Amino acid sequence: MGAVMGTFSSLQTKQRRPSKDIAWWYYQFQRDKIEDELEMTMVCHRPEGLEQLEAQTNFTKRELQVLYRGFKNECPSGVVNEETFKQIYAQFFPHGDASMYAHYLFHAFDTTQTGSVKFEDFVTALSILLRGTVHEKLRWTFNLYDINKDGYINKEEMMDIVKAIYDMMGKYTYPVLREDTPRQHVDVFFQKMDKNKDGIVTLDEFLESCQEDDNIMRSLQLFQNVM
Ligand SMILES: [Ca+2]
Ligand SMILES: [Ca+2]
Image 1 (spheres, rainbow, N blue to C red):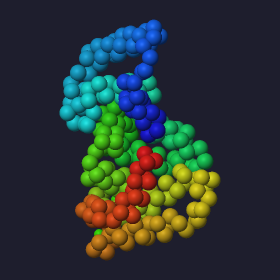
Image 2: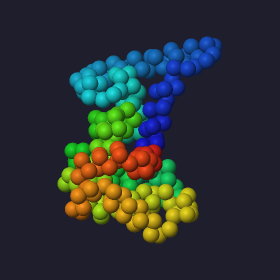
Image 3: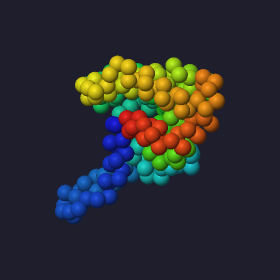
Image 4: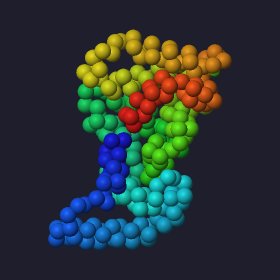
């Protein structure tokens, strides 16, 4: 979610404005004024939501306010649909076709399967991806790979996700990729993960194999970088 990551990184750079000239003070003044107004608005409209989110996520109330503002800017309707995900990803991966990956990603964010991602869904996922434990991140990734959400990853699902990632990267960016590479990639992955060789990967198998294998971990890290 590059666009939103941008919003997020502005959280971290916000504190360091070096010079204290008049423009800076004016900027501070305007900013504080706007933020006060926003805070008022939010206190009026969604007090419980924000308190609850602060307890449920790894973000502070202040960070949640900044994220909320960014979210409202990008999506004034208050919800994100699949089309928005596709548009954002198309901007970030202009040399590939990101639509399938955006589709799968959207369904991992849309935990309630309503066809739209609310701010709550969004920050919950972001909190895991940015500040969650390794275990939480792996659980989230498992859910992303489990396309039909039946609690298992089968080989077709893994193939679909890996292929979507290859499509998104595009041959232009990775000319060394050959046609059969996704299949090889998946064969190796799946063989390692399906410990009892029953053709499906359970969450336990997934967690175990990811944590014991540096190569899988690195590959997942690579995949996580495109989120
Ligand atoms: Ca499944
Ligand atoms: Ca298995």
